Image (cartoon, rainbow, N blue to C red; front, side, top):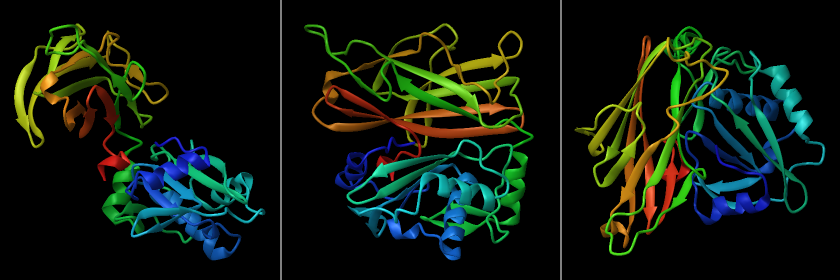
Length: 315
């Protein structure tokens, strides 16, 4: 999720032209109000994100054709964080766990950023009109019967995901030794977590790194390097098995590291003059569940930035 806490953060969305997406929605402050229709729309939008991949609703930003154009003056003073919480908690069934509401001081009043996690054991969430909604094509639409059944299944099977990061977060810098074409190593780390209350006992994780990135080293848990292709190009694949015992099951309450050493990456000096996005494909398999996601390392000179699959820059 994006870190949106100040008016400067909202203005940065406008400056960078971050469009609405499956995980991001902009609304002008008057959309928050005490009318019946406004309260229903608030709950409808929140449940749609929860029933999908999660996301953020930003109140206080005007948009044109899904592109943010202006930060407005803020909501009516009667609208507070506590009021929004009370509306959602009293009108949504079942209660959404982990929902966060961040007030943002605007020119004359408050804007609000509602951050909604994807639903798991309580899915799907029902809006006040007794329907179930999902996020699709920048809007909230009613779910089909099979989609509701799939959401109910989340509580009985694992729902695993991997998060990638550098040593200092989602950004890193690298440099070169004298007379060397390959950079000093950059450490790529990862963790695996479970959105479902159903633990995963036996899991296989594969990470495919674009062939133009050199793998300089890896932790002992990763298997041998295997070349192969997928839809985003030629990759070098690493594989890790996680089995209980001797490993811990992967359970909802805590994420666990893929390994303590990470994967050491090198970047050739040939790629310093332009901006590149190098795809990294992650596949996860455990009984009852499989997934494939593609992250990207964005390289601008010696600066690196990790972009997760739903990052707004990828829309």
